[in-house]
Length: 260
Image 1 (cartoon, rainbow, N blue to C red):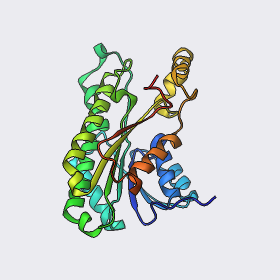
Image 2 (cartoon, rainbow, N blue to C red):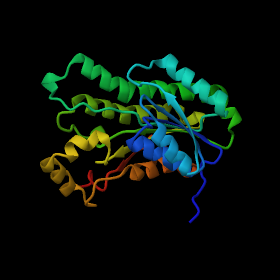
Image 3 (cartoon, helix red, strand yellow):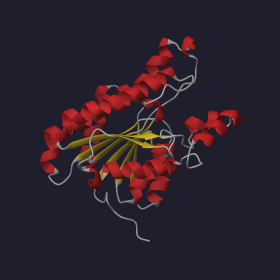
């Protein structure tokens, strides 16, 4: 079966692309013809190989979201535009989780989680939007810039032992709506995907806990944990012209967890 090429000729930035959801999304975009610019602090060779095997083009950029600042994101966007001509999609996926009782969370813990999960996402989105408003929109008359953020079930719930993560992901849902309100008139769509329980390194600890893993599995109506590909497909939709009239949405992809 021939794969649709919805992103042929398009450049997609994916943060946190070295593994998990970011890697799955990078491969999915590559499979549909995109040039994928992967951003991560760790080795991206596995993602690059997988994207190329899927028929896409991949460029790896090393950047640590925990230490990057607004000027670093502005430079990243400028470099991508210089090398590839434009940015058509930004997938803000980079994230971290720290499992610790609220009474034990340090200021350093709190600031690091918020920086990676929320602050970096905002300033990279700002950098891409600034380029788009100044130059991109005029050159890309048939395309709307798509920004897709990775939220979480903990954008709606408090979770257990993850206060900073829950706060950051509530923030992702809120900033998604705020930016959609401001930027819709600039032909920019800002949406988010809220993954359920997905098989990634971030969930390894609870998947290896037989009690918690069973409790979670028993609550998912579809009867299984999700895979990165499940999230990737939702990202492809929100990034495509099929979602041109979707703006400020937070799409739950959770096997029915929140509806239970």
